[in-house]
Length: 478
Ligand code: G6P
Figure 1: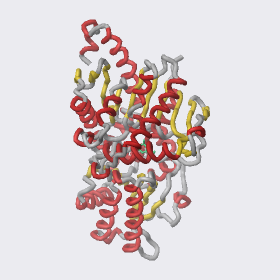
Figure 2: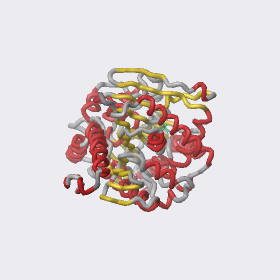
Figure 3: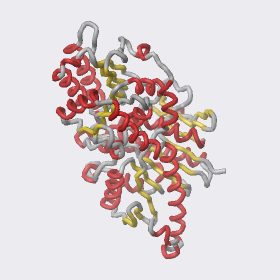
Figure 4: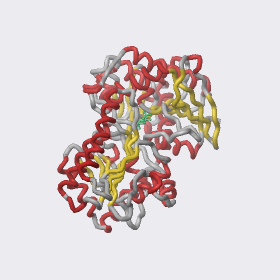
């Protein structure tokens, strides 16, 4: 029987010591739980030499987890280097932060090859392979070189860089060629889909056959938008469990007495954290009557600290929080309470339910699953309000949130006021619309839509080898 094999850099290993921060790990777990399969990737550990890189297999329920450590060199070239110091800033339109080293690119290719080899070893010809995120743009190329004919799909969880940014990366042409070795390339938003299409046709002169199909060197690649979703029923269930939020924070948090704002972000320059806290300070200044009656809870996970841009941001962020607390704190009240660690997913859902406002201020974001999880966790009869950056992918389908430009301080302050004072009827009506959207295309729909296309696309490819004229007209119009 054919199986699904997923490859991603992060893997949520059962009983792993720390919950993985970021939406990808949660989403893949949700998508796999239902249908089972294999989840392959890095185990989060570093070892000294290549000889110490062994794959470990663990089975839980219907999922097999196959993971390995990386060497210190692989980690610094592939992960901290090319993936997070070249591709990440590029994909988030931060060309000022792009650093390129050919040795890091080589390390990236080496790790892509390592996992392609493992795929070649474990996959049967009828298995479907689904590769996730910017860490693995070149895996399909190596799989093809190793003789694999499997259906191989790729989903990018973050935005797609426009042409003028790719042109600043010396190996761009090669990477986009490698991307066209996948059968289906999935993007989070319609905008990213268009940008990706344009990059393929301009940089490679790939031929655009349909809105969602390009042909390059005899291979057809489907490039399509699949907005990732959540599992609303599971989130609602988790959120209803009572948790004493006091236990999670170091200082008392008065969720009942005060209005609370929740923010959950990795400490990443794409998340607009400094912009948000600047606006929050401005709000406290402008509306002093809120002082002592509001608290901003922030779960802020430091990450990628080997990359200088992340180190600098972490330092600036901590200083910013301290400054706000020093400026406004009163004897029994502190305006910001921050936890610098990842939190168990079900605890997060319980906190979401108790928070009056969720504030998302991304300057650029693939989707931002916090937006969707916050809504799914709400109490239908007394829901909170979502303030959502218009630059997050989620904004494309969540227009009933309060959409805001995070770089516009006045708009941020006004929107926070509107959120805090929104009448219950309006909150309920916005919540209903937003929840409908989440249910209409949930995490299973996302997975099924992608995998169905991967199945269908491959049959189209087969037809094409027989000559386009023989293709069923239904397919020609798609
Ligand atoms: C984003 C990326 C994921 C990544 C996550 C956490 O969501 O799209 O691929 O796993 O951030 O980042 P980290 O570098 O800690 O894996």
